[in-house]
Length: 328
Image (cartoon, rainbow, N blue to C red; front, side):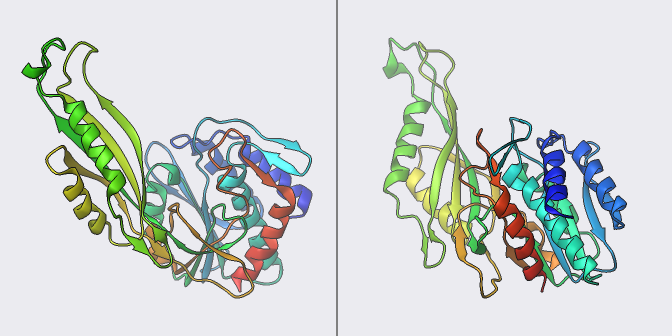
């Protein structure tokens, strides 16, 4: 796969709307392309007609993996100068293209032990990766692809997502003493988060959090009987440390419901590569049966998920060389 063919392949991927839940068409395209190149391809079924795409020549000892779903909104590809724009250009369809090109180069050199594991659903809970983890394999190394600015990941933070719920008592807003404001309670709880000493790790750095969702009340002239908020913590250790501290901070202001837990991950690195720690999470915690994990990919997380998402075409080319080196 030469440069022009690689760019054409990536553009074709980007031009297919594969917003999470709509991955069927792009999975079929990937499977058809790999079959045409001579790979043995399995389409592992998920729900709603979606599937993962798992390819091999013989039984792989090392696999390249990434996801092919994207966040909304979809927008197609365009090239400006040496940049390829479009939804998924760097997260993660450009990565997928570079991995296919690297696998093809390894195969041309006589390698038959390289596999490809491309999954759906990474952006909304990693259901594709969880299913792929049950796929029989003897792989000893997993090279996962996410936009890392072409650096090897040393570690990634985990996730603890929690929902806070406050309850009060409705009353006419002209008589606030007859009611109990759930929103006031929620505000007290959320403000208290700012002064908490969240855990810190020597490698991963500090725990950070964001308040992603808030809702409450029934009308402007009613003392609100209910309020809720969802928090996303980027964790650096056991999430229960954060959970216990959150209980202390919130106190009686709100109830806590655990929504999602993803552990932080320490990753294998190789000499000769620039390295970095990443605050985002990946499919790696859910692909534990595919071998020792590594993380590498062209493109920057700073433009992923934005309306200006792009991938530098020179970096795309260099990523093919880097993946070949990482295959060993």
